[in-house]
Length: 119
Length: 305
Image (cartoon, rainbow over all chains, first blue to last red; front, side, top):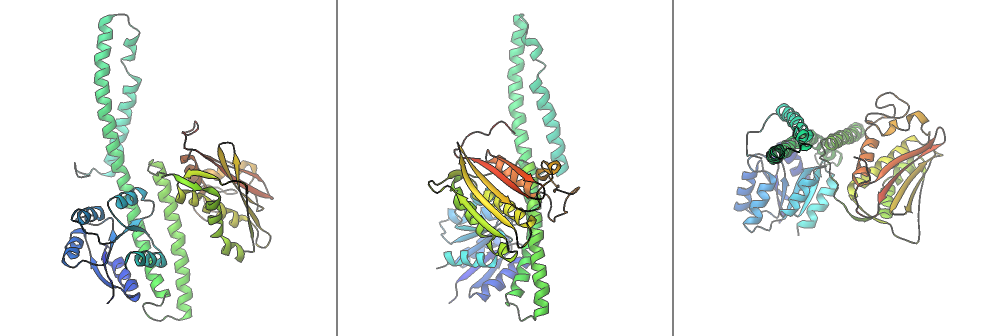
């Protein structure tokens, strides 16, 4: 069975494109359009990895991350951030993100980083 | 962030200006005139005034910091808004080119490759403009770690090998063989500087006869990185201009050679954020050598801010 990735991204179009890319590479996908939605979905059916956008409505990526780690979840999280948000990257890693990818991203980089955390 | 209603950008800028004026007035201090007085009550008044001023000043500084944080949040928001559509465009085109959403014929592919390269070009411009805005807002920070500078330069040079090959330009690299040169730097930011310098050199050398030489040298307490080309060179009167924003040699305003005219200005600022210095020597018609110096130990900036 394919590994399941939750894409938490409020830009619906980007989420759709990510789904196409990931499915073509053998992953199963689900999407969440805001932070609260992401947390609910993770609780209901823990995915093998979360691709987490930083800037999202309701709860942003940091809040999602904090809440996940506080409740003991060890699900691998890769942050999606804009370049030159170094402070955001540092903050994210401190909060327990496993890795990050900057937007716009290269497909190869995306898949390599995901493969590293989905075992 | 939610401690109060988020003010508009205009409000933030206006209040920042007002606060700066008040702070300046406080610092020049009306109380200073009392200082020379031998009258003890005047000295007492001065003491009271300066205590009040201290409290006011602390409050002002807190307020200033808060506002400038809000100001940089606006910048982060704009950055996000510019990059998201670029990311979507890029990924959409990549998916088609990678054949993941159906077959497309060669003609379609050729057009998409053009779209793809221009998305990258636009992305580079957006990055330059956002870096410049971040620098102006004092928001661009460098996170320094000890790095082998020789390796950094070699890594950067490698990324230019294929484009140099296409243009039949020769790349070379020299450094002291006896030692490893380490310096505390922000790896990605120094790579950005090197990419800019190599990119420029490649842009200005003639195909087939271009030579670009990179050197990493040691100069008591500094590491000196030089990138020499035998390209068109820079006129004396343009030498300072190349480091100015929106300027390029040989033209008025941006873009005789493509790009924003921001790359070198940003590179120079990044080097200065490291406590270093950047410059160029050039002979018009014969070539240019851009160099920058990085301190080998973390130490304070030389007088220049």
